[in-house]
Length: 180
View 1: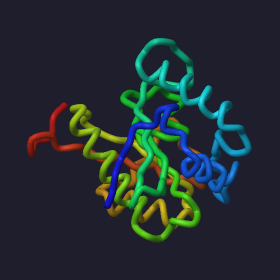
View 2: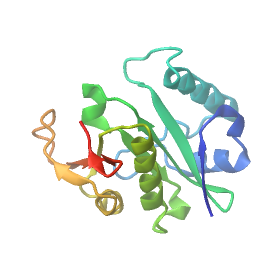
View 3: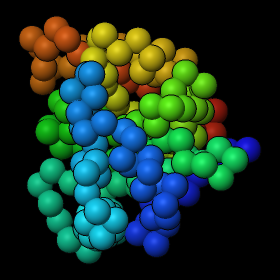
View 4: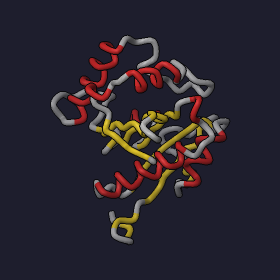
């Protein structure tokens, strides 16, 4: 059974902490895990800081309002990810609206696809009209996840010479209609 919880400091139990330590600090595609190697208290401080931004209680140039989630399957955390409500040029180049990381021991089980589906549905609930995402061209799994969820490759005008990255866009239909 899938369960999605918004990431909050009081949810940092031992299983979630283990997942944060299992996801590499930097994976084979250069994606980072800012929680790797940190103590529980350091992670709680980081999560609390991000929550302050998410609820517009503080501002940061590169941390925009967002919701961050943990995907649980049978009460085990299997992935972390989030949804940025709006993007600046930094995030249009370096990630997009949607991001996720699947616990290495839980990869290739369809959890990434399910998570992106859930995040896309959340974006529709928020009346967002499009989602931007990106991944390394060599990351076969993430490219499949995005394509399977209706994302299409597009040319990012901010990154015309980035030959190692696929940029994706998904137009969201709200109430069966495309809205601007």
